[in-house]
View 1 (cartoon, rainbow, N blue to C red):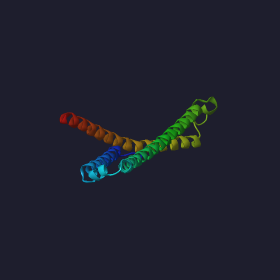
View 2: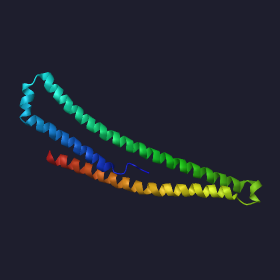
View 3: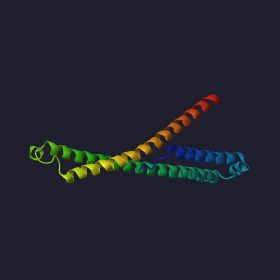
View 4: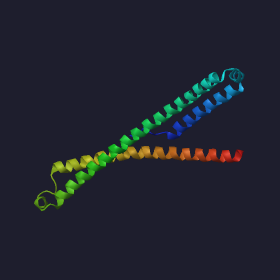
Length: 161
């Protein structure tokens, strides 16, 4: 199952975190504490700014790690679907081979076991594809929202200039 269902919301959350951190940084430089920074020794003020930068990077790193985990889950889902397709193809090839083999052509076209395996593989594939179709639709909607959001930001940025 696709675990990466809401990339738009994840991106919006990360953008919000970055905006919040920038606001905090701006507030710190505009507040009376900026006077404190100017009164500090350069090594102290650099250390303070490095700590804030490290916090920002840690927050972004956590968001990226979550996103990477979601992508790994999606890859596992796609690998599972690929394996189901391969199993279904193998079962169909076996059934087709039995139907065209002269030794089996006179008898039943395929044994009940081969038919059962083929039907089971196709049934598993049908379930997986139906499940993935719903997730793909949700992913398409999220992608459309993300595209609209980016276009909105781009037009807002050009309008403000």
